[in-house]
Image 1 (cartoon, one colour):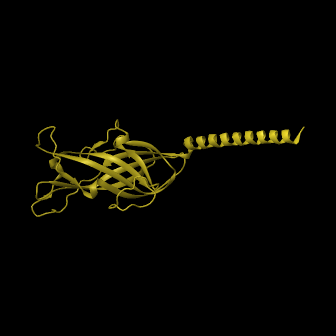
Image 2 (cartoon, helix red, strand yellow):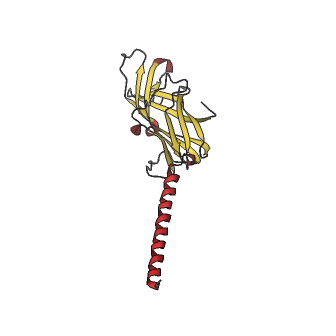
Length: 218
């Protein structure tokens, strides 16, 4: 066998081995990206807590008693887990790797994301069930929007929309949440210590606080 022929045969074998290794590497990468054991599941429920009266924000206005409120509806737009604390005045960094979006209403149009703070005394239905990367999370953020108020005596089906939300509707709560691969975590988000105040210009301001409870099971 000539040296030239032997050299060519060796080159062909090396090329074949490299091709096999490359294909094997691609296959392993695909398996890792779809391996369910690398993720955890987070299920989120929402409830309303206590309505509280507060002192008047302005002399001409004052708190609205809860027994005068027939319905107060708002939407939950997004729920986000943070691996580092975020300032409630900071603008959201949509591409940050420290943020994991658990629920985005724009991506789930079939989900009923409206909640009534008057009727929501018990747990809601599951608002979101989402896969998340295992990690240590220290903060959760809920974004609410579109507040609509109906007082006792208001025409049926009509809502007052002159309601402002504090902090631009971005609510934060600290949480000590270590999520492991394959784990299912149940979170109850509580809109608590709810204040509704009528201002002197006949508008309203809603001020809720966000609480988080980690449930053992549903």
